[in-house]
Picture 1 (cartoon, rainbow, N blue to C red):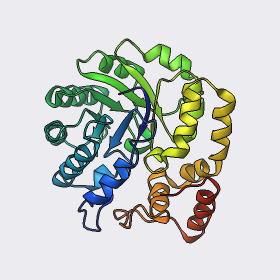
Picture 2 (cartoon, rainbow, N blue to C red):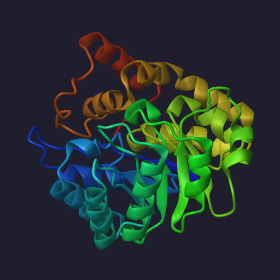
Picture 3 (cartoon, rainbow, N blue to C red):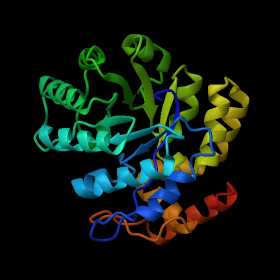
Picture 4 (cartoon, helix red, strand yellow):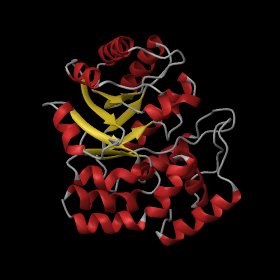
Length: 293
């Protein structure tokens, strides 16, 4: 399940944080016919950090019910405290998730040893495969190479979701960090083509959770090694990538899902929607790439 393309849907919820499970099931079910190898629930795009434990559990139950085992479900369990993350991981397991994903969420900056202990404890308690979520742009925590290698040796830790390498050397990073039973994958959708053509075996996509047809056309070509086709699909999405880079994928995907009629719920405050000009630009992009329900 930690190979191929993982699609991360939004988590529609009311202004007071109650998950719209019907809308969530629709968002999740529409991913199944597409070539995604897993679905990532309650990731950053799924605004997990803005939901209570009870609502996160409701979201997992709803997704498990509608998927019915058709596609593996990876559930985000990040939380500030280790005991809270343990509880969330146990909730996910109890509801039928296939794996968990966790970012090192913290207010006080973590040391490398603190992060290691956090992951080891939550992985042991979850009893499910763990994917380490390395997302320094959000968490402001930097995983050292040594820490990733230590985590790769922990029983139950099966994968890492990496940011795009600054030097673009995917093959070199994979060779340095990878080992049997530990999959190196990447995120930040504008890097899909380069990552998969560069040797990555997996990619975690925020945009695929809302626009699966467009993203899987790109990922399937790249995974098949068809560079010309992959570059052509990537070029079609260039304007969308630019907007995601400028405004954040969660805001852009929320606006996209709203415009094409998938959701009618707000972003969780204090997050604000795209401005009018950005909404207009997105509408043009969605029409150009034939994005519909």
